[in-house]
Length: 147
Image 1 (cartoon, one colour):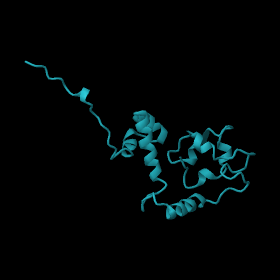
Image 2 (cartoon, rainbow, N blue to C red):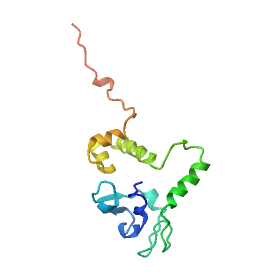
Image 3 (cartoon, one colour):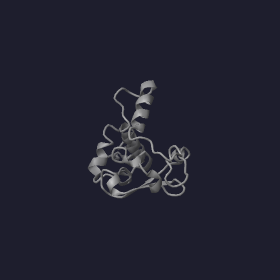
Image 4 (spheres, rainbow, N blue to C red):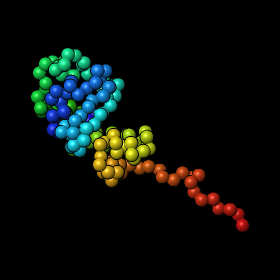
């Protein structure tokens, strides 16, 4: 999932979510690149959001937004009890996992670049370092003809 600068994304998020919760519209001042972005929201995330009256938090349905450290605190609590996460794994680690997943599903570096909001393909490629991708198949190998 995408987050804005710090936790500014979560403040007033209802005003940036379309009516069926399928997209989040982020203005340039809310993300690192400074460009406006439209981020699709997967169905499994939408099922956990609350679309209510304007001004209500889509995560809780309440009028008051979560405090700026809410998600950081929630992550710390989850990490402390998790037997799956590694010691130095952060929320940001999932951005790399997402990048690899996008590339595996689409096979497209340009789609990956757009999805991640990167200014260049070189930045997107750094997210794929260590990814083992079979570049050549047997059929790609040159044929040797008998003499």
